[in-house]
Length: 148
Length: 141
Image (tube, rainbow over all chains, first blue to last red; front, side):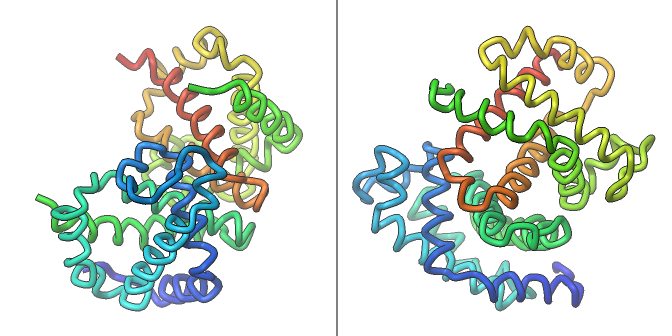
């Protein structure tokens, strides 16, 4: 069971409060597809992903980015139960979507970087450590938990 | 594989970083020590607390080496040969740590550059840092 201190809970809540899902979601997914192009293999039905500007302007990427961040909200609002919260999503990613779980970490890293570009110095080392190292790695582990 | 546009972008960014090498380098190191505490095990002989002399001078050294590499991307193996030997035979850092540090450099740049740290810029720098780390780890075995 992951233990969260009061200060960690506050940090997570305050970062989330300032996140606009409709902006951060699309930026994050677009960044994953640009920086790690092999991830495009999972998005064959999304249309034009031929170059950075196509990816960044692609409406399906944008919609899906919002979907992913909305799913992350479940973890943020339920930090004591992340593994159970994501059990079904984990199964889905394994059995139906066949996503290599090593890619989850790439999304987590890109999300941290997008938050950094938006928050600037407010995303200081302590915030980065709680948000990224702890929260996002728990999320990634939960999403990987139903893989076999 | 770095395109010529990416190589130019990399030189441009690292030239801008050279005058603030100490700030960038020490911030990246501090982020790494805070977020990935196991990385501190390589620095038990130094005082790496925030703003310490060691943190700042070490950070500066690293960013200056990166800037030097950026100017000579096509000859990284030759340029970095001494550093590569040093990391292999003396420092013997577990190679996964390079990725952790690279990530913290990216976060540092992202915080400072904001929207200017576009996905294309991010990709170019990430590729450069990976190539740089690969050369540093080349002689490990």
